[in-house]
Amino acid sequence: MDHTKTTIVNYLQFDFETESAEQSEKLVALLAEQGFEGFEEEGYSLSAFIQEHNFSQDEFTKVIDRFERVKYTQTILENINWNKQWEENFSPVLVNDFVAVRAAFHAPVAAVKYEIIVTPKMSFGTGHHATTYLMILQMQGMDFVKKSVLDFGTGTGILAILACKMGALRVVAIDYDEWSIRNATENIEQNRCESILIEQSDSVPVNEKFNIILANINLNVIIANLSLIAAASFPGTTILLSGFLKENEGKMVDAVTGRGFKYLLTMQRGDWIALMVKKC
Image 1 (tube, rainbow, N blue to C red):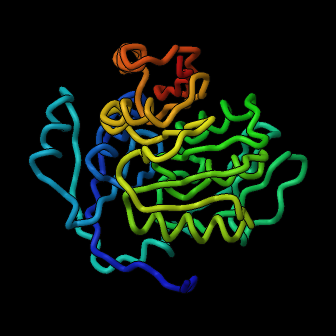
Image 2 (tube, rainbow, N blue to C red):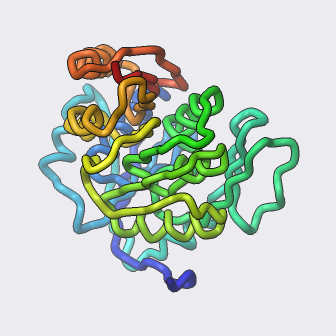
């Protein structure tokens, strides 16, 4: 694998003037579902980035139409080296004294139970986003020792790596995006997690069952895969779900209980939530 390779593509940048933190949270959630890959927030300003060839004007308009007032400008970023941009703006993430997520160029973080080193590239899941933080927080109270784990929508591989470090016997990490697979593979190697098998796929594998399933993606993808998640679960399998807003909690609870899961709890950070459910 070529660890020095960079990705240079054209991106579209949308700069929004938001009215509140809540509006920014909702924009991020909705745009992420439409393929936007990176976000930067500062005060009431939000910048969102998407590869030019992945942008759909119709889908973008549907998102904007959900807001009474939202102002934005659009810019084409030609031949942007996103890796360089990402590295320059990446800072370590701490989840209490449980986990530190940092890049190799950061100094080691003392007094945490687990350290995860990632190469900060254009993949979702560096720990900065509220949903990744919530998933890690829920994992803190769980027993992963000798368990089989599925990380559905692995992104940078952080959750799979943490499961490995917490003693999982086998971790299957999947993602539909080729760049995420390459990035996660590099991060898995860097953290010396030999128990992780990484695969490129857009749906839950049905050829084996898991003790724990992690799915930090988005509302629509999770709901579309709930039947497959159920098929990949033992009775008693614990499933963590995130990537959606508090306003969607009722819809998600109804969806999981309707497919044979028992709802256990919700954690919240800002407008984002993560659910823990169990296969009955």
